[in-house]
Amino acid sequence: MEILLSIVIVSSIAAALAAVLVIARKFLVNYGECEIKINDSRSFKVEGGASLLESLTQNRIFVPSACGGRGTCAYCKLKVVEGGGPVVPTEEPYLNAAERKDGVRLSCQVKVRNDLRIQIPEELFAIREYSATCTRIRNLTHDIREFRLELKDPTEMNYVPGQYIQLFCPAYDDNEEVYRAYSIASDPAEGKGIIDLVIRLVPGGICTTWCFEHLKEGDAVRLNGPYGQFRLTDTDAPMIMVAGGSGMAPMKCILHHMKNTGSNRDATYFFGANLVKELFYPELMKELEKDMGKFRFVPVVARPGDDEKWAGETGLVTEALKRTIQDASAYEGYLCGSPGMIDAAIEVMVELGMREDRIFYDKF
Image (tube, rainbow, N blue to C red; front, side, top):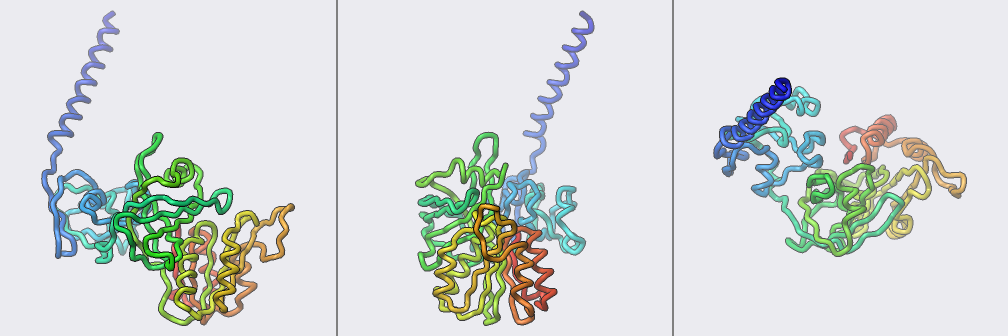
């Protein structure tokens, strides 16, 4: 009996202490009103305690972020001049020595506990939030779909072909709300109010699962953007383009732009897939080859199935690149896809004589 009574007393004390800690956190850990000064030219005040990323978003300053504030994507880097405190362990893997010395931080990991001075690129002030309607969903392969979004408010987005948006994924099941980044795949000729996305289903992916299992035609969605520096250069240099999977999205947008503007640039596009059934937009690529005299589409299938008839390039996309291009010294490279594929393609391009400062890429 005494043992049981002791257990009850200890449990009661522990519960009381926990309650005290909750109350203390709520009422005693109060950072009050804090000022965030940006680029020494504008400022606003917020209640302390939230992350810097949250505080900026609440004031409609949209910093790229694709991990829901968990500190794993490293998109939300910015410079904290004063008031950010020391770098925390969750930031360390994503900041090199030069960035740390320069005050670069992951804004999702910086807590607003006092006044802050920060620096961000001026172009982020042009990023806006949009409401839209999903008007079309098309299957491209067994695990890739095209989603068409029509902007409602505002009705147009002034994006540059190659850029991306962040799509808002609401909370569902046991998942919290997140934003995820997707490249714009639209034909600019259809108007700046149409945003096409090419999305691959990632097993266990919060946003891709929502897009495939919950998002329906006619549903309202939210997004913000545009983001990114991946785009065509203003030169006449011949182009080598390399992509795989949903990396098709920005390439499609760029190619439409080239066609619409009458570009005469030589462009060879290597698109990699594991199986023949994973290739998509074949008719579109044929049309672009017909309409753009100097464009060539080279699909590469790594492992054609025994039941798949395939007479085209096989193996790795980098192997097809080597077989097709002997001297890349005059070319520019445009790459979009997984980090592994892009790193391998860069290595091959440099080996073929291309200058590294003429290679442009978007890893995801």
